Image 1 (cartoon, one colour):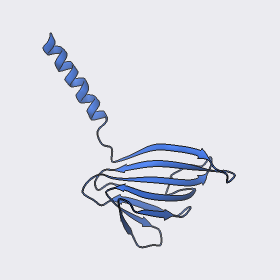
Image 2 (tube, rainbow, N blue to C red; image 1 turned 90 degrees about the vertical axis):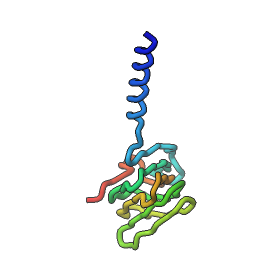
Image 3 (cartoon, one colour; image 1 turned 90 degrees about the horizontal axis):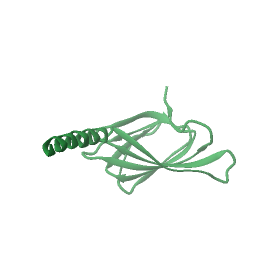
Length: 128
């Protein structure tokens, strides 16, 4: 009986581990709060990228400050040369500018994205 219980527990735990396996891009919402600028809010998100993963072209209804927490990310902003940032470096992305981010390192990469955006609009707008 104990052998069967142990096998069932192993299957359940194995399934739970698979369900929590690393996603290509994982977003963790940290804070969302009104600010003194009427009709705007601050949103802060942690974004984790698996190796080689690209966040395709998109924009935001406001400004973004991207701070690389770990790894190496390449950002491509419309009309600019690509820039590669490592942990501890940051980038300002103006409102409405189409951009992408790609993990170009060998391990996981993470950024802390802070947005000052218009309330009530989608935070991420896919590029057309």
